[in-house]
Every structure is written in structure tokens, then in C-alpha cells.
Amino acid sequence: MNKNIAIKVQGLTKIYKLYNKPIDRLKESLHPFQKKYHKDFYALNNVSFEIKKGETVGIVGKNGSGKSTLLKLITGVTTPTGGRISVHGKISAILELGAGFNPEMTGLENVYLNTSINGLSKKETDEKLTEIVEFSELNEFINQPMKTYSSGMKAKLAFSVAISMKPDILIVDEALSVGDAAFKRKCYVKMEEIRESGATILFVSHSEHQILHLCSRALLFKRGVLIAEDIPKTILHFYNNDAIPKHINSKQSFLNDMYTLHATDYDRNLQSNSRISYDKLGCEILDISILTIDAEEKVNILEQGNRYKIKMQVHFHKTLHNVKFGFMINTLEGFKLGGLSYPSVHKNVDVISEGETKIIEWEFDSILKQETYFMTAAVTSIENGTFKFAHRISDALIFRILGAKDNKFTGYVNFDQRGE
Image (cartoon, rainbow, N blue to C red; front, side, top):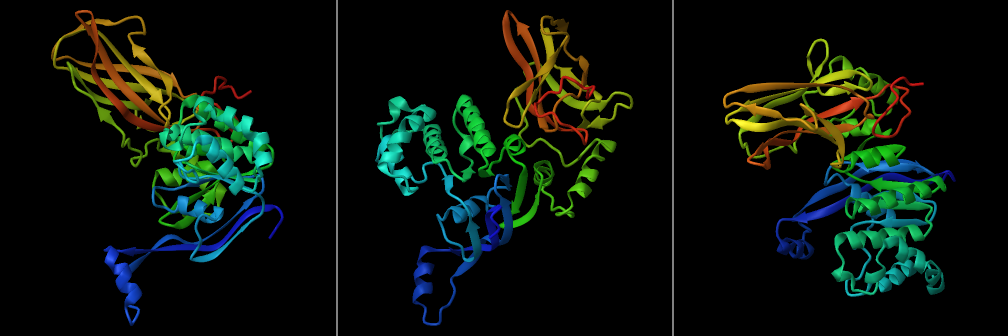
């Protein structure tokens, strides 16, 4: 095995036997002619790839695509049906929440249990104990049974133990999907520190932001098959559009196609499936859309640095007072980036009569990073001194930002569009 390779997977296959009824397993084992009562389910089917030392690689795919099975095979939790896995270096893994923990034992006892499984002596664990407990922020709970821990507390302890091992290879399976925001941020910083130290990170997440931010490469799985490996934004495009790429090994070919998307500007497959329309208490938001400035064509693929218009159409079936219109742009994780109000943050429209239809427009510069975003639309009013939402649609609109090919900034907002 090449010394520059941390993980090499060759023809990896994992088959599970699925039985319609529990008794069928016994029937199969006792049948004199070895009749099959099961169906073969391929959790992984002939998967091959290599991960170099120092890489941070994201594993992307829908539930049931084989991501967690792959990590269990690499870490030795389960054995393959066929194929081969070669690992060069010490692995530390954070798999399913609570995996490797005894619920009857205290957090402290589980620390010693996990470190001993990973080859540390009691003396070595003693030396790391303060660091583990302080990072986990579980000081006052460390002597309580694990069965009393919340999912967030389990994740904190699992992550703290894993990173304390100073691994050559860190494997993380959705461990950062729970827990408070401050701890998640601390974990991201620690993972960046581990990555900069030269360690290899294999990372499973449904968070597009996490994959883009942490990973240099990504693998896309579908129904147990590795269908593509490329840079994260390429893989996430295929994942979001549920598409099988034609140019699996051609990064530039795909990127050329990707950067011409702004010529059409509207992707009909890009629809918000998390849209929630709340009660209509006096009005109804009929439509909210993003338009080009000149032609006023509807778009949902925006080019960074261009100017666009947001148009909201609202019909009032009741007279409302002190009315305000607004929208909020959110990240995939729900972080509120900001929005605009009409007439303004400090002003309202005094009265809008029953039967009126209002069209509100805002112009804005597309200064967000290349990412997918959601827009929430709302109309509020104040009646007899009481504030209320007259109508609100959460995730009313989904859109994407495409950056320039030489885009270098990594934050959410690019304040300098001059590119100097």
C-alpha cells in the first residue's frame, strides 16, 4: 500500500439477508436442500476508492445509501461480505450516538472504557482526563450514569474522547448534528486543528455547509454504489438534483456546465420541500420571487455580484393597520443571514383596505457566498396594540448563488465586490 494513502477500499461489498418473517431464518438453516428464504440487500456494492493522508473527505448520500455501513466497515465494527479495506494509521471514530458507551456506567467510567478499547493504558487516560472532561463541558455530570445523558451530552463526550486520542484518521458520522451551537463551533475549530496537523478526516453529514466548509473532496453514494467523487460543490450539485453525473472523472467539464447555469437562471428542479404556510390572519402572500433587474425574468440561480429584485404579491381579505412586509434569508442550517422590510424597519403602512392587492419590490446585490439559501416571507400588522403575523410562509423560496470561477472568499458575505 502506498505510504501516502490513509485508506484504500477495493471492491467492498456488504450484503444483509432480509427475511419476511423471523421463522424464515430457522427454516432456511434447517432446510435439507438449502432453500433460500431471504432476499439479499446490498448495503454496499463493489465500492472502490482511495483517501490520501491529510485529506478531509465528505461522504454524501441520502438515508440508506450506505454511508454508515461504509464507516462501520472501515472501523471494523462489522465485517465485509467481499472486497478489501487497507488502513494506514490509528483510527478514532465517532459513529452512532452512544455507540461504544455502556448506559449503566457513568460518563467517567465510559471514558476509561473507550480509551482502553483504543489501546490506552489507565495512566495515559489519567493524563488526558482533564482535557477530555473540560472539552466535553460535562464536569458536573461526568459521574452520572450515561442513561441519564441527553443525545447532545453523549455527542459531546464521544467527540471529546475521540479527539483526545490524537488520531491519524478521524471518522465522524453525523455527530455534529446534535448539541448546542457553541459546542458545534468548538468542534469545527478542533477538526480544523486536527486537519492542519496532517490527520485524515472522513466525514458524514447531511449539512451542505459542513461538507463545503470542512472537506476538500466528497464521495457520492446512492443505493450502496459509489457513483461519483469530486470536489464538494460538484458532488452537492448532483446530490441536490438527485442526478447521476455523466462526467464522473471530469471536474472541468462539470464546472464549465455549472458556470453557464446563470444563462438560464431558473432551475425548475430547485423547489423548496420544507415550505410551511401559516394561518392567514387578514391577508395572503400570493407569490414571492426573485427577478432579473432589466428583463424581470424569474430566477433561482443567481450570479454573485449581480443585482436582482425580490417581488412579493399580497392580497388583503381584511382591513389591516400598521402593516409591514418583509423577507428573511436563511442558510440550510436555519441561520438567519438577514433581510429587508417595507416601508422600513421603523415604519409601517398605516392602513390597507379589504380587497386590495399590494405588490412590494426590493432591489439587492447578490453578495452571498456560493451556497444554497431559503427565503421566508412575512406580512405583519398591529391591531389594537397587539403585534401579529397576518401571513407568513417559512422557506417560501429556495435559491442558489453561483460565484465566479476564481472566487476565493469563504465567509457567507462578500463585502468587497470589486475583487481587488
